[in-house]
Image 1 (cartoon, rainbow, N blue to C red):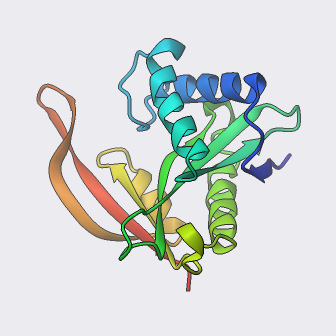
Image 2: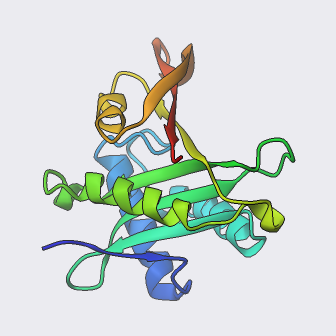
Amino acid sequence: MALTFQLDPPVTPALRDGLLGLWTEVSNADGAVGFVPPVSVEDVRPELVKHFVAMAEGRMRLLVGFDEAGRVAATAFIAYNTHRLMTHWVWLYTVMVHPAHQGKGYGRDLMTATADAVRGLDGPGGSGGIEAIRLTCRGGTGVDRFYGSCGYKEVGRVPGAIRVAEGDDRDDIIMLLPLT
């Protein structure tokens, strides 16, 4: 069964708890979403609050994929650039698919839904359409190959920029999806 995607769903306690659960589960399944396992909901909560603040301030949008039972199954946070020379592209953060849904094609569905949603956005302050999506990912996970299969191109790499653990430094890979 396919996911149902919604841009900017109302932030309810159920959505908040679903996002916290998803982020915790993905992190504990060794997903590269800002944490190293093990993590708890309380570890994740401050980061989600930062995302909610950015959403409330109009600096970030949220795309959620809901499963057939209405549970949060996938997310992507879309962040506007505030620099006046960079408002024609957005950042993509915290791209996640619940581990229980891995291998079902939901990651590709999420990336397609994200690109479609971004194509419909206007830049901050009505600055015009968005022309590209930029993201970074942790080297050594293989996720860069996944993003490449979704049309993203590697445009930069900072060797050893992410320290997962002492002696385990990973590249920070910068990827771009042109929308025009």
